[in-house]
Length: 329
Image 1 (cartoon, rainbow, N blue to C red):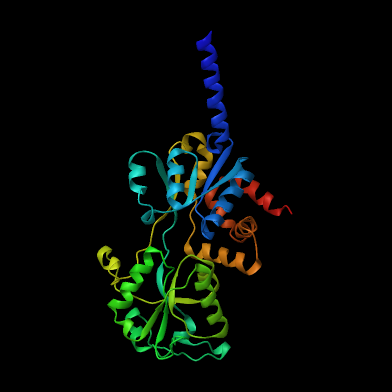
Image 2 (tube, one colour):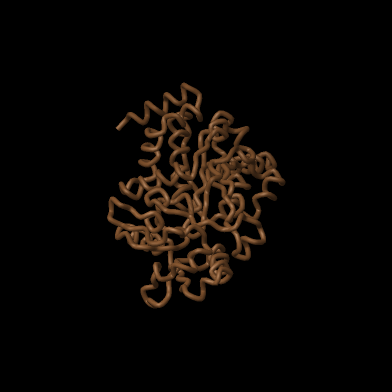
């Protein structure tokens, strides 16, 4: 009798634990949120489809990238809509061990490096802006244009906006700054936050002023402003680490806990077909910024603007269910 009671209590405890973990519920899908705008947006799109087409309850778990990767392996999280494969140290090992599975590529056309507004090179007749650096094409060319990108605190030198202190790419960019001899006539300025960096670009852009600095795609900045990525030498792993080449494009996967395909096979088929691009993502993020929209509002707008994606991603009946939901107030 005592053994039966213990077994019963043990079973009840397991059931309670499973109920507490959203990913174990057959009607619940849990998304990973490591904190940046684009993953929040993609979670909102996939979440809307989960609810309206598949009748699933949607939950989100927040944390840093390493914590979210561990949660994905454990099954606390079901899916990561935006797993930056080169930036997760355990990604290959987690796949090899069977903890996670790749479902498909969300986008792989992302870029990062030193950008300038297009009007700096080509001018903008509608705004009365003449081209200030018509021959500026490569990072190495910056050496000739320090008098254009003047540092406010030290006008005898130019200013290059670097990455955020503590980011791995900041170290790479500073090496690039030294490798091309830009330290002779430029100040390498580290903005204290992403918001500070974005404000510098937007302020310069609105005033039609020259600016050069680090940025990446996709962001609302790349969706809103017409920017040019300065060319560099073709990427090599060692060359990039030493600041001598362009950065690589990172394959951004839709990755899932290995148990998800068996638990939600139909929804998994949708996730396998989910594919966007940096440009599409950036436009959605710009919509959020311009309209002070929520991620959920942006998801609805995005699917209304890109009905063709519903046809690519979903069976006809599921696509119609989402279309009907999008017409609701």
